[in-house]
Length: 260
Image (cartoon, rainbow, N blue to C red; front, side):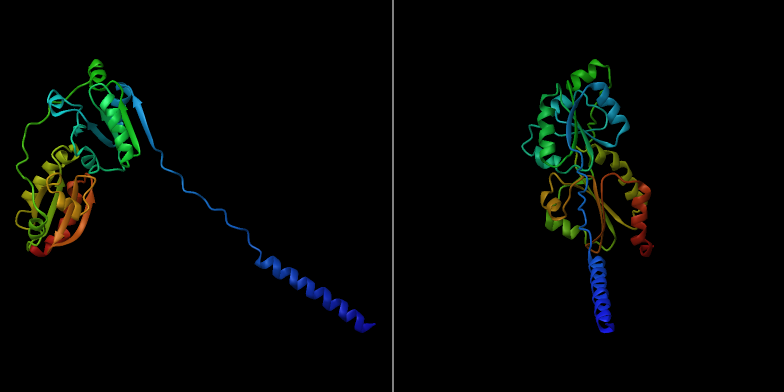
C-alpha cells in the first residue's frame, strides 16, 4: 500500500513540474508596431493663408515664373527657378527636402504642375498659392524687386581643380551655393564676414553647384546652401542649410587654433 501511495505522489509531482515548465517558457508573440508615416500633401491655399504660413513657419518659398516675370517683383525671400528650365527637376533636388515648400507662379497653373513635380521628387509638404501673384497683389501684399547684384565671389570649377583647391595648407570652408537660392543669398554676407575674420587662418570659397555639377555629384551636394570644412583635402565637417555665424566659427576654430 505504501508502495502504491509513493507511485501516486511521484506521478502528481511529475505532472506538476511539467506544467510549471510549460508555463515558464510560454511567451506572448510581440506585436509589431508600425512607425507613423510622415504626412504628405499638396494644398491649394488663398493669398491670406499663404502669407500667414510663410510668416510663421520655417520653409522654402519657391517662385517658378520666368526671369522676365520675376524682374517685375517677387514675394520676399523667394527662391526662383523657372519651371520651363530644362534642368528644373535637377535644381529643385538641390533644395532641402525636409522643409515645407510654398510654391507660386502668376495665376496658380504652373505652380500646380511644379507642386506635382516637387512631390514626385520627395518633397512631402507643399502649399500652392491659389491665384498666384495676381491674388497676392489683389490683397495689396508686397512684392520685392530682385537684386541685380552679381556675386563676384561665386566660382565654377571642375572636379580636378576642386580637389587641387582643397589641398591647401590651411583649413578651407566651402560654401556650395546657387544664384537662385534665397537661403544661399542670406548666408552670403555671413560667409563674407567669416572670410575677412579668418583671412590669415583659413580659406573660404563659394562654389556654384549649378555650374560645377561634377563637384556637386562627387560630394553629394543637396539641400543648398551646403557647407563643408576640409583640412589637407579631407572632409572634416558638413552642414546642410542655413547656419549661424557662431556655429561656423566654432567649427573653424577647432582646426585653426594651430595656425596661430
